[in-house]
Length: 114
Image (cartoon, rainbow, N blue to C red; front, side, top):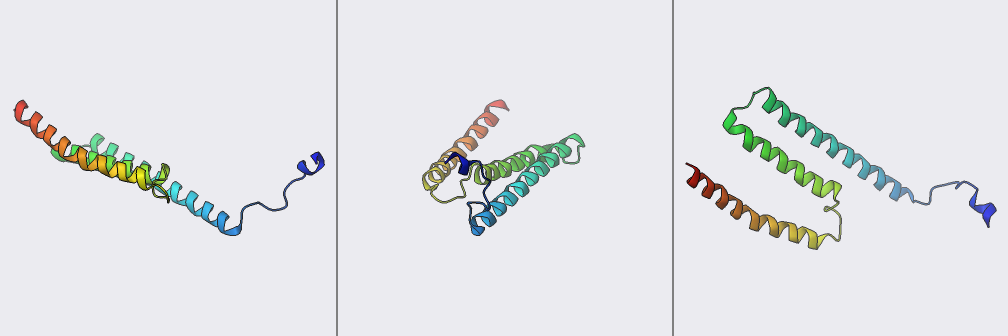
């Protein structure tokens, strides 16, 4: 038995479809990573070169951060795959509850600050 274990495999144990799917998934992850790096560079350059008006810079960077957050969730944490119904449900519920609370907090701090 030990003689057989030292021999190399003539072919991969994966089927052709599995290899194609693995290459496709790898390509998608590399593209999304490059896109997220581009978003990071774009947000950094927009602030460092002062090309964006100051009042628009913070919402712009928050928007880019939200896009990156969703890309990381769906592509790197694999929430786009099957059998992730409950995590997606809890995440959506958290967003639905967090959004009005965040808006209320911003309005409350804005009212009391000025």
